[in-house]
Image (cartoon, rainbow, N blue to C red; front, side, top):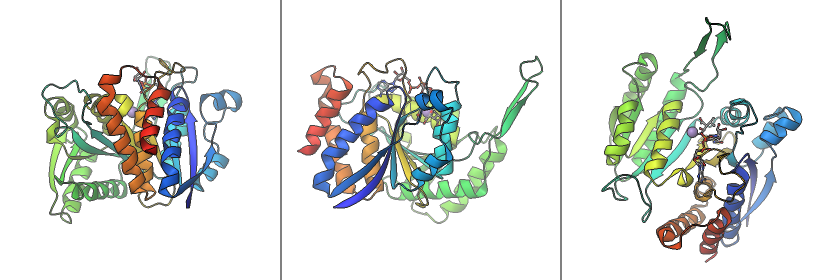
Amino acid sequence: SRSVRLAVIPGDGIGPEVVAEGLKVLDAVSPSSGLTFERTSYDLGAARWHRTGETLPDAVLDELRQQEVILLGAVGDPTVPSGTLERGLLLRARFELDHYVNLRPVKLFPGVSTPLAGVTTDDIDMVVIREGTEGPYTGVGGVVRKGTQHEVATQESVNTAYGVERVIRYAFEVAAGRPRKHLTLVHKDNVLTFAGDLYQRTLKQVGEEYPQVTTAYCHVDAATMFFVSQPQRFDTIVTDNLFGDIITDLGAAVAGGIGLAASGNVNPDRTAPSMFEPVHGSAPDIAGQGKADPTATILSVAMLLDHIGAADAARRVERAVSDDLAERAAVGERSTTQIGDAIAKRVSG
Ligand code: NAD
Ligand code: IPM
Ligand code: MN
């Protein structure tokens, strides 16, 4: 059996609750898939920060680099200044491990209710490829005359030809592998003229190598409208880091809720481990109550399995989730563990 080094970062709030269920399902699918996971858990997050002031120490980062893949719950806590853990832990990991593709499927599963009227599963089936290492997320900028009436806060968007090219190329690859072979660039090139133009020119250039893929452009504001009014417009989307963050929460909402939205922070060149996590955050409003839906994390485990080449195991997990979702309306409210148990049971056969 193949041994896989897996780092686990449960994190804050509902993070540990949903990760426990993700691991339960991973344990259920592993034996028959010929996989064993050598798991190392890292106590990063709010508690660590309160204890030591550390978010993601260099030594831990070096250890993470030695792993094959990472599963993360969520980070962020009301007792920690906003941005401390988000930047110091989560974004630091994404940047240092070169997760330039933030892969976020938006897919309506059969039997799942969407707030959109008259929409079927065929209408909401897209993959958002969110750039993960650039844009307004780099931390370039600063503040002067802080706290005065003349304070100026600058937060720059950094977009490199290298960074834009590699994420757009990945998006073409994804689009080319999907039935519709349609790629939409979502940006705001009517206002963010420098970055938008770089994305547009790169789309055109790289697109010449993918004549089988049709392309379209949509301003991000209009894209939010179309996510709600005509989601079938979209197949594969490539977009900037911040726009991708925003539209994937909207995507989660139209595809049945944030509790179902999975993601992968992918390093396609495999120079460092990729990191899989639900799209949602630490949900302090429901933490510790057994109310969190672990499905997003379990679907992130399926993406993790795909990434390590265990496609059969990934499909089994997806099928178990899909079957569970199809029957959810009938079974009524369940706790985090009950959902995890039910899906793990389906996976074990
Ligand atoms: P959030 O995603 O944590 O919560 C938004 C709403 O969705 C809340 O009402 C929450 O209860 C609900 N929700 C989230 N996940 C759910 C689940 N699995 N099941 C059921 N309901 C769920 O977003 P927020 O409230 O904006 O942020 C809370 C904290 O999480 C902040 O500190 C934020 O910075 C952090 N955050 C972290 C990540 C991450 O680690 N990737 C992502 C987003 C937000
Ligand atoms: C997400 C989150 C993060 C992001 C935050 C917590 C840094 O919202 O994973 O979607 O903005 O990328
Ligand atoms: Mn987000």
